[in-house]
Image 1 (cartoon, rainbow, N blue to C red):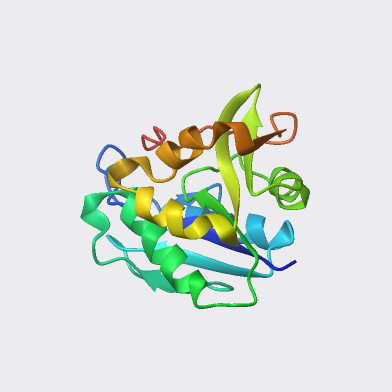
Image 2: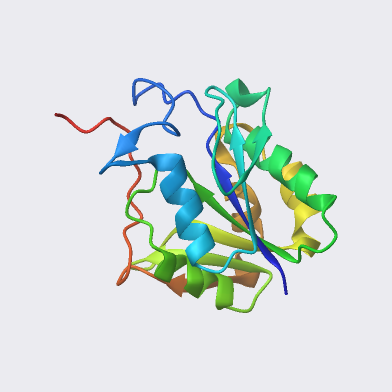
Length: 181
């Protein structure tokens, strides 16, 4: 099984005060942290969807979402459309760029867990990352709209979702606001 990592990082970070991808947190850009976590967790290739900010991302393939103002759903669609053309990829692990507490141990649990839809949970609350088998990609892409990304798809397929607890090795908190200095 070949698993790709997909980082959604195209947003403008309105509440944050600018795009989150290039923001340096604890000495590392958020986008680089996300790529490293996915790589260390065993993802064979990592793809990053950018939009409001464009730049180089070492150890990842950058995909550009020109429709980034419409929301996260369009970024997921861009990623899935590209991955669909990569026949060697069986699963994709999707995460967000603004999760500084995400660890490779948490992602590895999701990667290694069987199931067509595997969702990380933090104290039984759904979070990121989420692994989707290739068979789910067409419907997932069609249902991804606005800022909800995969939320509706996961809810519609709740009986098929495998929850994997990762709260003991990571935090699922995102950075909606820039830390005060």
